[in-house]
Amino acid sequence: MKIAVIGGGPAGLMAAEAAMSRGACVDLYDAMASVGRKFLLAGKGGLNLTHSEPAEKFFARYGERRGPIQRLLSGFGPDGLRQWARDLGVETFVGTSGRVFPSDLKSAPLLRAWLRRLRQGGVTIHVRHRWCGWDDKGNLHFSTRQGDRLVSADAVILALGGGSWPQFGSDGRWVQLLAERGVSIEPLKPANCGFDVNWSQHLRARFAGYPVKPVVVTGITMEGNEFRQQGEFVVTKTGIEGGVIYTVSAWLRDEIMANGVAHIRMDLAPDRELSSLITDLSRPRGSRSMASHLKRRVGIEGVKACLLREFVPKQDFSDPALLGASIKSLPIQLVAPRPLGEAISTAGGVAFEALDARLMIRALPGVFCAGEMLDWDAPTGGYLLTACFASGHAAGAGAVAWLQSVRNL
Image (tube, rainbow, N blue to C red; front, side, top):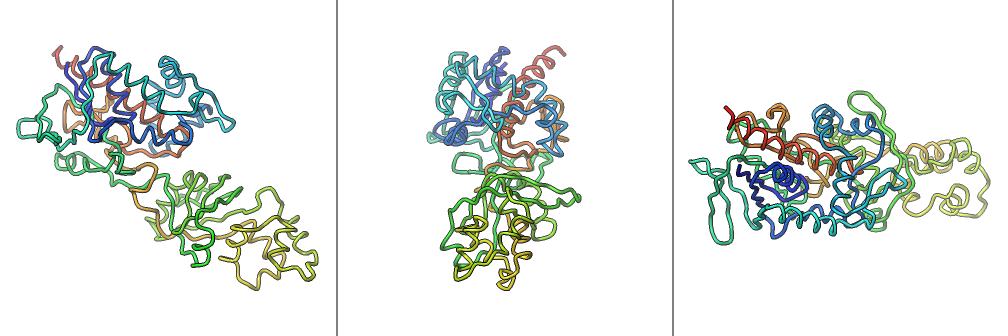
């Protein structure tokens, strides 16, 4: 059984391992000069492999695609992923937030051990091979530095990523190649992304790059459900980005797509009650400036104070009740998600309805899909990587099972 895996990210590498371990001869192709580049980037600040929360809560992170993702996770979920890392000699630990990390927090040692095991198992890795589709005889067509190359395979696993961070290889070029062959594809959209806000020039110049913490973000989804998330974000020259924004980015993106803008409210003092704020703001400030009064009485200064100035009418600063209400529920209008190329991940892609239970494209027998090129979405926190690993495992196992079934016909 000769299987070609196209894409050297976590999903592609896991597909190669799953197929290899089941007796297939595997060649893996990647357009970049080395594999796992986005995986290494993800580990730059500490590789968040997965999450330790209860299964029900974990599955719910995948929203509308919970069903198909849950089926994939049943074959290779968070516990299986931690055991896989342990088998590679990398222990993991659970952080205070419930996120799971390698003991040294790094991605490079894990990737090196993984590639060593793949090569020892017979997987051949071909870099600088950009997939260009098929020729008229069904051969895979690659563009290389040495010229075009045609490759035949009994089955193909596509793990080409979405369209985020194209400099690391996920550029979405595959969309047209599959669409031309009748594959149902949902438009690619940014996920875990920042958003544009019409800041004043003063705020852009003074506070771009500043973190805002802690805050609580609240809003209403298009379905009428309230969301509430605590964390922090960063002010940018164009708007806002960061952890708490990424967590709710799917709702915000869809709201903007439907209505042109999205509205959120931010609690700039989540550890204070409104009544307490009003009491402290009502204390005489004497000759002190309003900035000094905010800092002394309620701990609001710097970027948080600037955000208040940005959105609260000047006259409201003299009314403790109105000012306190704004601190607890500051309205911010988001006008656009940041471009797909800047997003951490991608929503949209090959529709699950276009795939069978083995992740094989129904319109293209023998061609399987895995990873971020599938139509699913999830927040950061280990959920993205876990689903990529799980789908790669399912596609690798599925390709071998399909080839065995064909041979037995």
